[in-house]
Image (cartoon, rainbow, N blue to C red; front, side, top):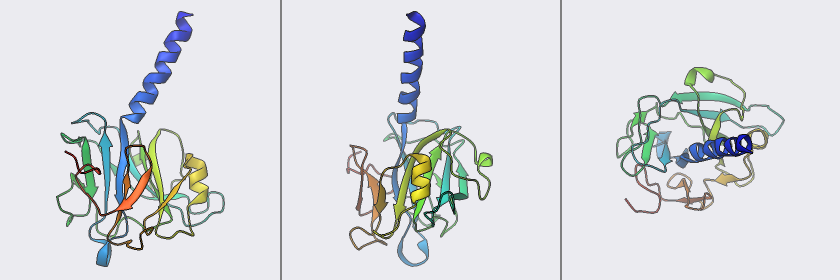
Length: 199
């Protein structure tokens, strides 16, 4: 009986730690030469250390099993923490406010693709690594069209919905933002700020 109780507590603690950190906002398609791209993370508690996490960007341009379901960029998050609002923003150097960590302009593909958060290191995801659900914390599938989605990767990673960044016909001026219920909506970007305007 005690052994079963301890096992249940162990499983639940794993779910709690995984829910601690999520992908909060993604802006892949921005004006001109994609100079304002970013990915924002949100933690339940403020000042959450991001050591041991990595953002991985997957190319999902084909619906055939595993075709193009490979990584094209990975960013180690060691040394970063979320802020007092539980926000950590990673983006291009010209983004305002300045992101916690930067990557080169035009890094994020416009889709259909996936951004994933893993408990791992960037060295675990060299160029053209196949998508995997192992150590996956959170992931978002997105596209800039309502007619395409990264189906193979969605299946591999257990993602049910692909969010269309162009759902409002304003793809370059809107981002994909997580709502409080865990679903996503498309609206004016809020880099470095909670999506509901609080904080």
